[in-house]
Image (cartoon, rainbow, N blue to C red; front, side):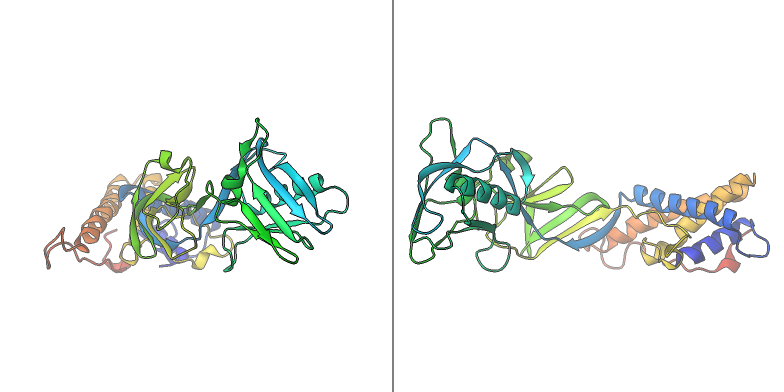
Length: 337
């Protein structure tokens, strides 16, 4: 049922518009109460189930005392063994692209004028979630742990490995960084998680402390929620089907703009719930208390019906044939006024 129809029925039940013609002021009030009814219904059932598919995004924390020792042979980007800072600015929860840009800048500074070495973070299908250091015209590149005593070894944290690569116009491709976290934002309407699946395998929820320093790769077994974000652990080496089922609270609608024809976000059999709630509030404003109580009672039945029906979808909760299967039909002529 659209918002426009819900508004029509709420006003008709409350007899606030005898001729059933549009009245902007009354409509606005009715819509406010319909939105209130949707929220009250959602609260009563602890949110409405909803499914979504998410895409993980690698995130990094970097610090100015993290260093990597580079040696580059040949070409315009030649560099004798030098400890190079990962970044000149402390970063928290930043992207791989930003880490790559920071490291590229410090490498070019260390090499000096004319340096055109590049560092990129790969998010495509090739070398996914790995850094690529392109020497452009170098013949060898060596990545090692730093030697300065005040440095944290960033070679493993950021590049996931050390070693030497040789050849014409050589590039160095990292492993997946050991301290990389993969996460994504939860949906804006998220209230509570019901289940999480990675590559169609259910994940268990884990305490957030296991995500402090990931350093473990493989098939994810757990998920964690913090600051409106969801992470998985161990860190996967590529994106797979990432599905969640959660409970949400619908957003408010307005008769202004495009919401007029928007369908009610509650399950179809319960679209009349917010209508009954709105009618009750409108009648209360008219001091028609008994009629208001009647419609509030009609509204209060619906969350209970919904929870019984939802439980009946699980045969372990209700034997077949039991439970509520009631459907709600809109028939204004049957409403007692």
